[in-house]
Length: 405
Ligand code: PMP
Image 1 (cartoon, rainbow, N blue to C red):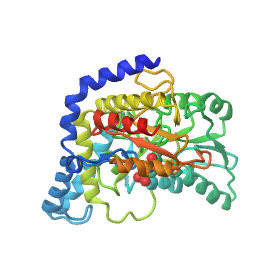
Image 2 (image 1 turned 135 degrees about the vertical axis):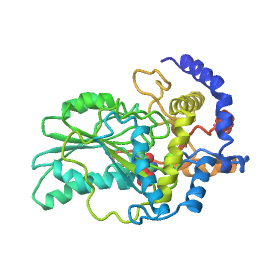
Image 3 (image 1 turned 90 degrees about the vertical axis):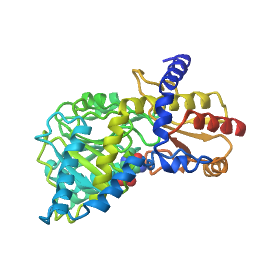
Image 4 (image 1 turned 30 degrees about the vertical axis):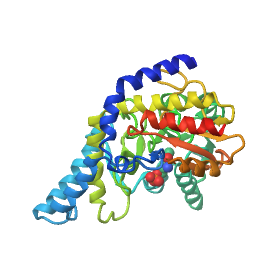
């Protein structure tokens, strides 16, 4: 994909979706209430539309009760809300066999991944088996698997960790190296859908091809759910894990979706206690909102803005962009950058750059982004977009970055 085609494609998408995007942005009170500020940290957490705020208020002022316990109407309504939201999650994830799959509510992606590692993975693995761990992805998708291995070793079951290979230039997984690495004892692969620093879609179809049909794939979808269509019917993965707060619901909500087709059944252990009912109510409302907006159009918008930002940055010698530099837009056969662009300035420390950008009203993330031990050593500035990010914000950011060049 040439730069000029990327630019033309991105401009066409922005032109087509501009009015639609403006109407959606107006539904975020925190943004309309602070017109002098620009929130560019949606990979950390997403802002909430009025519909989600209303759903929280309605739930707490009309039917708040515990779930799965009482038998009076508010309790029954809350129990039904939890069960209906389970089905809602399956529908949102385009589940091809909802009668067989399971949805387990968690406090977020971290707890979801940890639950799989603690309660399910040990049942899958035998002495001599191998697991693939993505050591340059988010720490939340690394430490649970390493801890599970330690736990198994204490019981005399020794599991080999195969570090997921990467292509440093693009920030993508190295699918060829992975195919060479994976063998018949490779039972489990932890992977990420969209990388939280490099911003790339990590090409799940190629991972499945590389590891073969039998390995279990657990997908950390923290940066994809709510940002693009995530289809369990199309992705041949066994687990999808996400955080509600990154998908416009409340913090403390999230889910594990389990296909229940490979390996033992997923039955999280222990007494679950009271579920986060208000978080679950917010999640149902957020998924409704995202579906009505259209995750395909949300993806088109954020990909187009990211392409515009990356294209602008590429012309500024002072900046180094992390991850893929060339194939940036929809339709790329290599890798598609989603709405995350991470970069460094040649002379300005990234922490300082974060402060400078805030002095211009931009809220970005500047540190090493919870990346695992194989990730970037030096800090960087991450700009992460959502459907409420406007093209004017991206252009203003580019002009400030240009003035610092
Ligand atoms: N995985 C990825 C890819 C992430 O970006 C994050 C959050 N930054 C997490 C997992 C952890 O999510 P949470 O903190 O909501 O549990």
